Image (tube, rainbow, N blue to C red; front, side):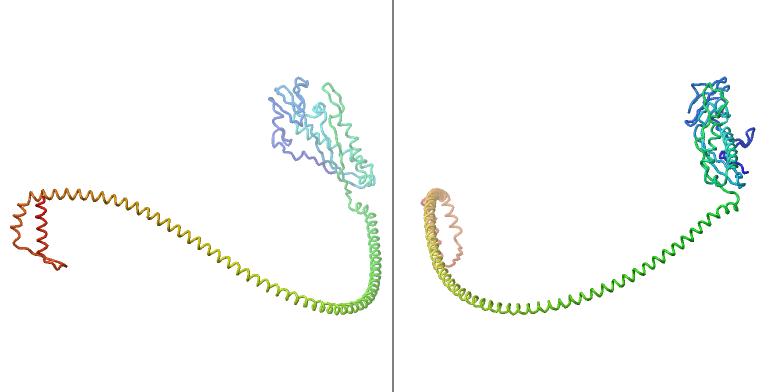
Length: 439
């Protein structure tokens, strides 16, 4: 018989010391003193002097452990357990059963008394070893009283339910602080499933499969024969349908051809009739068109004559209107020229009168200015003559002496005159002498 497949056997183990080969424990759970904390999925049991402390015990609780205290951390989450068992059935046929059990510790106050949870990992391993042994033993006992068919077909009712019915009362129980019952472990098995039932003898397994294989082969041959028959029937039906369709299509083609010929003859008749009607209608249309053309030609000639007459009348009326308009334009231009000449005359006359008035004003002003200037010039001349007479009277002796001294040589140059230059000199001297005398 093969050994049970225990999942916790693969956990790390101690390499030396008195715990060599045992699972490695969490140091936070096995320390001698200090705070110990359980996870939410663990139940902490704090024992002092042989009694469980209510205040510091509970699910996910924390306590302070003294060296004389005892603390057990019990996991309450579900666990899975795989087991495998070999056994000979009622027909002396060897089979192998592979199953899965799901369990959990529902009453930690009972479980901590049964197992030593001071070392939680080792306690869990011992619990799974015990449960595996129980499952394997019960499975072998059940398989020994069953046939191979029952093992293969009645896994749930013949194996799983029976295992659950036998093992649950042993490991179950109700726990209280003041309960010292000797029944149960405080464990609940939720389900047991048989995952595999395998016949160990290949010959037996092949012999068991022979009737089914023969039935399958027979059913396969019958199915193939029925399929061949159905295929042949379908092919015959399809051939018949194809032939009927061909004959039907030929009949339809002939009928369609006859119908087309009849329709073609009728179409030819109708076309000939339409052509004759169209030719007659075309001839009538030509005659009507020629008559309408003659009428339209005559009407056009009449309209053209009337148009020429109207054009001539309009041309004459237009000529008369143009002549009248031109005459009126000449009269208007003449009136405009007369008005313009009158306006020009009035403007010239007003300009002449204005200029005459301005000339008179300028004459008066110039006369007044001239008379003032003349009076002023006369006064200036008189004043100058008086001054000259005074100067001549004062300087006459000197002038006479100078003239007498410098009159020895005289050069006279005369331009453009036939008179004698000495006459001009004599006149000048006489004027000087007269000026001197008058002074």
